[in-house]
Length: 255
Image (cartoon, rainbow, N blue to C red):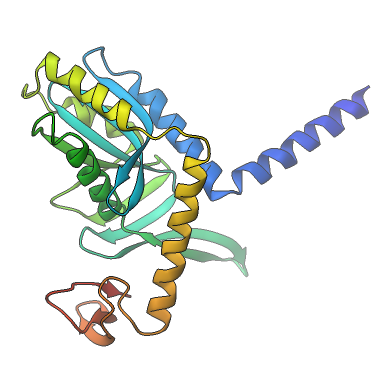
């Protein structure tokens, strides 16, 4: 009997390791953690989770939208750990992790990811466009990282916090600007626009991957993925980088 229990625990451990090794599952776990934290807010805050909205270029998935008398908060969740480096104007940010210890020295792992501020601005625009028939409202984009992330970032014009500071950041807005009647209209409008048809989220993920692959292919071919211009090497404060030849009309850069 004890052997069966040991085998069962081992199988459960292996399955959990496989599940958590998937970036998509790690992200979903983070979204659930943040959704639980947002439930701690008072009743004057209405939270909508995992919203898929139509846009002029396809669809965009928003982790959380909090509607309140003090504004509409559009939240992008990042379940990352380690040191996070980035600037609000950068195309990409960097995650730095301690790797394995070799000869008494810790190696480091570094991974790049899309600037989440830019990602969340797309969500901001989608919410604004959906609500244009209802009215113009204060929309506050927030990027929320795991408490395991040490944020080494420069974002003077945008809000980037750890999960533990998310609710206090939302509650720091205390100037009423949305009526109760408009709150109900906003929640109704977003809920109706939310795409829930079978396979819609799978198609959304497929489209994102296609866009990423096309972007990487363009860069590899020396072309700007935004406007198709040539990428040329430039010098900056932090070394060389690739910039679009159509600057300043196109401000795409790549490290």
